[in-house]
Amino acid sequence: MDFFSTEIIVSLITLTFLEIVLGIDNIVFISIVSGRLPASQQKKARVVGILLAFLGRILLLMAINWIIGLNKPFFYVGDFAVSYRDLILIIGGLFLIGKSTSEIHARIEGNSESSKPAKKLTMRSAIFQIIILDLVFSLDSIITAIGLVDNVVVIIIAIVISLVTMLIFARRISDFINKHPAMKILAISFLIMIGTVLVIEGFHVHVPKGYIYVSMAFALGIEIVNIRINRKSKSTVKLNKPKIAGG
Image 1 (cartoon, rainbow, N blue to C red):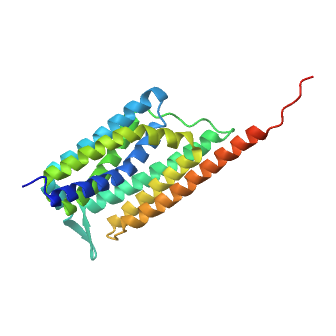
Image 2: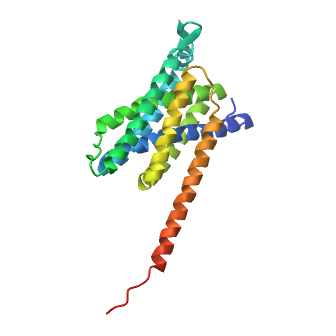
């Protein structure tokens, strides 16, 4: 097969873009989890988390027949057919909702004067949580990739490119989320929405991803504008602050 044909190039560009978009969910989760670690361990957790996501996608890709088999029902509840993929999506979605809710709870407790500070995670616990969500996100990513492209080499190249992109921007995204408290709450809210969508899809209700990403982009845009306005207001107040004349 000619890897420089127009069809292959278009497929590679499309799939790479899709892998990067799907990887954003993963980066947000990794950023939030790593933010609970001591500062000296956060970079290591981000890199390990992204590498695990890459490894998970490659391993799942090598097991295409097994992945296809996950869509086959293995038991029925009345007329409702349940497959292993459905269970993975439902359990993964519930885990994401529960984890995101606990993060909001931890932030509220951590900011409360009468409450104890939120506990720091251990590296082992953070990696374990990242692995669980990596499996869910990787499964969704590979199933989507297989549905779009039937060339394994093209899929692997797209995954590698998306991995490099994630490694480049992971720290910036993580620092940005951790620097702005409102942005972190917004990111956690995105994860709750994504977890809800995973559960819904586990019950065979298809939710168009375009609506989700457009709503996320809109909310993110509004928050960025809000951050800029607040920054500008603070700068104006600082410049216009009256000076106290010396005695």
